[in-house]
Image 1: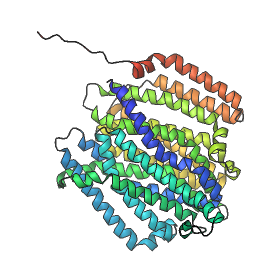
Image 2: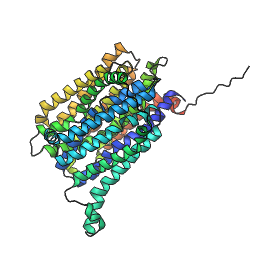
Image 3: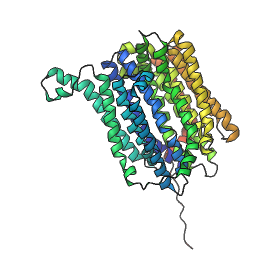
Image 4: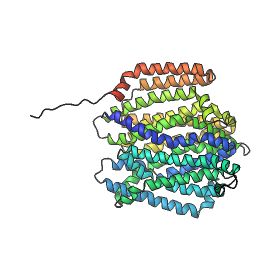
Length: 495
């Protein structure tokens, strides 16, 4: 099979598996915004922001290091067992310390103790499946990966709907029902975390096979090499997470107490509309990351990397414009409570920021395949400094718009820096005329539709159709070659 065609096929499967867990938070927005007031939703959003930060710390770059050392290794079993033991050991230490120091931890994060205990357990369970999921990806088993991810989503979604909508209705209509023992008034936030905890527990049970069937060997020298590779990835991950979620924490702390959680709730709900781009970029990255490493030793891999980036920009430009044009339609579907709509002006900025981040991940191949991950840490740290600086300076002045602007500037800077450092250290022949053409037109059309023509759906749809026409005219032959061409077989007659 054409390697690019295979890549897109796997990306589609990973896309479903990756999109659905992220779609869970998106699908639940109507549930949460109908059940929780803006302040409560803001509180939940801040807790999940801390979740994201601790997830990165507990992974400490081991997933990327696993890909790097697993591909091309003649001792794959040792790589697997060393990685599993490393993650399991660090997770056990985290759980022990977190429960011993839960009160100071609650004070620092400003999370209520009852919610923090749930968080510790969920974080531990999620950390333990990092290497099993990476193993599935490295061995090109996207269907197994997808099934487990989809089941996790189904359980989490089903339990959220049951606890927040169905159970209160049952108890209200029939107070003597057998389900009444399970119901607690004003327990909504706890129900959210209980749902997550049960789903994560089931996921770990399904992924235990790799732990059980593995013959354990801890190679200290290999682990040291993996950690040298991983620590810059950890720094980059923390910096990236600061760019991604720290704005909620800063909003809560820098805005006046009487409006802080409400403003965080509005910002977080409208931020979710940018998830369409995030889902596309994440699914694409899940497919290309193993591809990058497996093809690093092939003849002229740079050409394939350049092609992949071109396709990403073309598809991403369409998604950017489409979501911006139909933002008002989407808000009525997913953010049904009008109290949250005050923050709709952030939507184009958040989508564009997610697009820049996706391009950055494509451009970052150079430092991953050359083992120069320290550059990733440096670039992400620059983004984090921009995020924190702009938020601190402007949140007291313009509120959550400062967070949206900071996100665009941070990811845009990371994108530019990655290209700048990579062009001399691992030259890749990107077609920048094409990239800038699609990127520029999609941004201009989005700005016209949303800000100049005040979200007029007819004008916006016309601009989208015009853009799709340009894409079809310029990319038709290339897309046909990828998705519809068949590999020719050569018949060789034995002599």
